Length: 167
Image 1 (cartoon, rainbow, N blue to C red):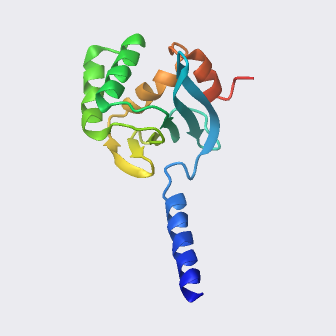
Image 2 (spheres, helix red, strand yellow):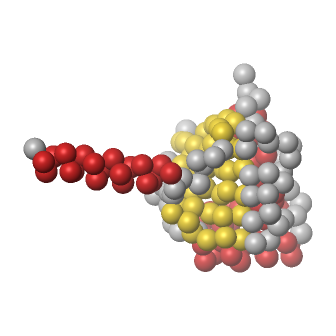
Image 3 (cartoon, helix red, strand yellow):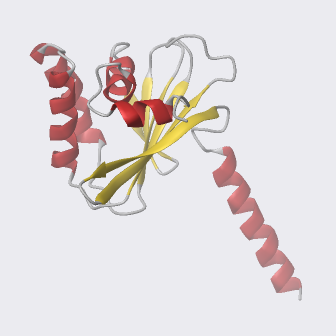
């Protein structure tokens, strides 16, 4: 019986530690949606922001949970294509892609990548709840989030869902 109680206490402690280390712990979910291609769901996305969010200079996070296996190279290529669509300069795209090549992993179904930005302009990526690293470029976070949140996004319905505007 004592072993069972100790196991429960340890399990509860580990669960509590993982909850409290979440990059989303101080943010509120704004909206969520699915990215689909033909008949397949590629991923689900969730947008989180400070409770009193008023502008992009406050903390926010985008969490993507993948439904398909996607290589790091394919993720990076898709990101670059989206930035090209949004008319970012090739110089900026090259500058932003470089750290992603060393930070991002290949993803499998159920894996989650999260970008959290803060009020200082620092962007931090997480794989699950484990930090992958930070990008200090103050323009990166807004550019990355613009892939989903810009009025010129290639996925306007997903944008509406993330911003809580979809009915």
